[in-house]
Amino acid sequence: MAATLAPADRLAAPSLRLHHPSSLSRRLLVPARLPTTSLFPHRRPRVVAMAVETGSANSKPRVLVAEKLGEAGLALLKGLADVDCSYNLSPEELRAKIALCDALIVRSGTKVGRDVFESSGGKLRVVGRAGVGIDNVDLAAATEHGCLVVNAPTANTVAAAEHGIALLTAMARNIARSDASMKAGKWERNKYVGVSLVGKILAILGFGKVGSEVARRARGLGMHVIAHDPYAAADRAHAMGVELVTFDEAIASADFISLHMPLTPSTSKILNVEAFAKMKKGVRVINVARGGVIDEEALVKALDSGVVAQAALDVFTKEPPSADSKLVLHEKVIATPHLGASTVEAQEEVAIEIAEAVIGALKGELAATAVNAPMVPPEVLTELAPFVVLAEKLGRLAVQLVAGGSGVKSVKVTYASARTSVDLDTRLLRAMITKGLIEPISDVHINLVNADYTAKKRGIRITEERIPLDGSPEDPIESIQVHIANAESKFPTAVSGLGEITVEGRVKDGIPHLTKVGSFQVDASMEGSLILCRQVDQPGMIGTVGSILGEQNVNVSYMSVGRIAPRKHAVMAIGVDEEPTKAALKKIGDIPAVEEFVFLKL
Image 1 (cartoon, rainbow, N blue to C red):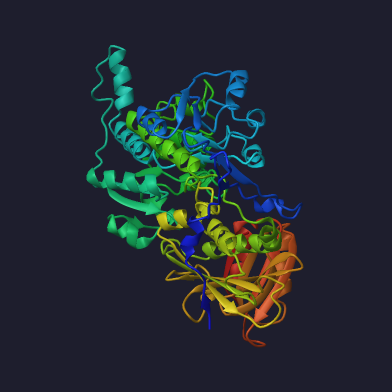
Image 2 (cartoon, rainbow, N blue to C red; image 1 turned 120 degrees about the horizontal axis):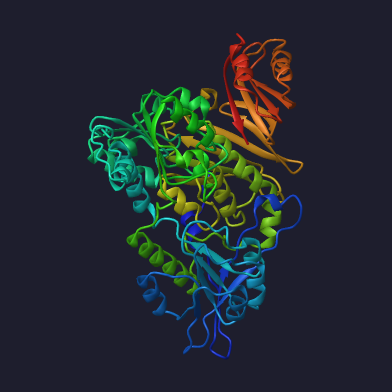
């Protein structure tokens, strides 16, 4: 009998301890950033509690606003705190002021380095970044000094979508070029004949918040909208009148392609020479996402050849691009200097969002936009360290087994343990599974604060169960299983008898191992990358596959075979240090005894 754990919303409701010294001042302890899993193998993680001074009953916290912030945000801050708006501070002036402040709000122009945290003398408790990126904040130093870092990631959604539509329509009707022609004293009506949008196919690559808003607006213009996002729910897209398709189907059928995906290893240069070759001649490309998702050299060639008729770009691999950039200067390109979030309304929304996050932190609350995670006791971190790595890798592996278009809606996590639910703190493991499920295809940083929030926003329901075991509770967990329900799999063998994509893992000698795929037992170290093959169990299979990989100079770290019975079906797990070429994977798939296979990055 599986015992259900406490409700998952405990994840978003960390306890706050209040201390009431005789001076009537109080300190609200709010959690600090959780060390990343990469720290675990090297040293014991250190966790600190972040104390936010609220002062005496008659005093207010002090907030330094170092860059211009919208009036609505300032009004919210002034309701709780004394606000000091000091713009264009030199590094020396910032260090001098920070020792008096409980919170600091910046945009991208102020560097908040280790020297700032050291100069604060421990008083600075919250840094708010009015925007998405946090490159200008030293997160490691913030953590060491017990300072919470929050940002404002959602306020720019509509502005970015509107800019995408603006670029699309301006490109279709040659607005920029005809305007330049008029200003040059010309009247070239015949030269700048445009194309209609009604009935045209718009392929949206990345169907998240911005992509969804673009889809709504494009349908209002009479366009037929399709989308590719391997992790979007088909019913959500269908409700918006959008058809989810494969990547190749999207780029091959589109008249317009609009990109709205984060820049991750899997999306870097996703529009490359190979992708452009699959597009129909005369396609038009819009990018208001990240510059790196397009191979800019390949795009120039596609523009020159006529495969791409026009491109409208707001983002570039290097910003600002060089003055002699062939792409920016190309006559078929409309270029804007990263204006996606640059509207009066968006800037005001950013101000409100960051003000609310900072106010919440000063009150001892934990914002869903926190970049730092809440406190987990050091002894729990030390004990669960290897299982944290296992949990993230199981989530990462499970989501890669989902076929594009079916989406992830329902996930169940099962822990086999001799401990009671009271003695088994799974908040961290649950967050890391969520991280593995979502982070590879998102620019959201998943941690213990925002894991449930992010999953909910994406329509993913995650539940937990504990399978009680007999024996000593000395080891916290024997195994972890991740089940994804109501989803098709690109590797059908991973679907268990209950119709769920199922993977199981254990920790062996401190190393995470994959021990079950679907109904098949395996034993594969979860390091590097993995090839799973379902095959007819017969002699010579290991040697045949190994030879194919060896010919391609792909190093095999291990091979493991799990089978139901001799000469029946088996699953072979092959660990590889390098990513095999498509040709090598095709050769493996062409082996007569191989019924299906999948390549997974761990």
